[in-house]
Image (tube, rainbow, N blue to C red):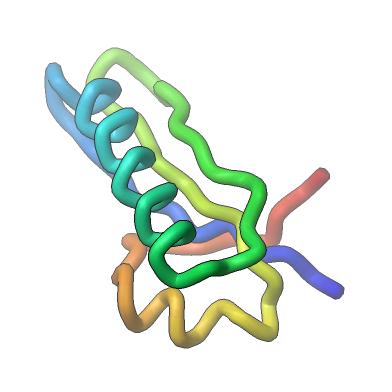
Amino acid sequence: MRKLKLIWDFRGPNALKTAEHHTIHLKEYITIQKLNIDITGFNALSDMHAIAFMVVDEQDMKPIRDALKPHRGQIHQD
């Protein structure tokens, strides 16, 4: 089964802190919805660009995408 990485982009001098905080909310959503999702996190791509992400099964992506409105997605590479 293919896994998809849902990505939220944050830009500016506080991008990394914002992405880190957004990850907390993603984990809360997973808990509240009782989802079987193990991979979430955040990364700095540069000083002014960071991402928060969640990896989901392709079959489960649409309702999560519609609820959380990620900025983009890509196929997850293990």
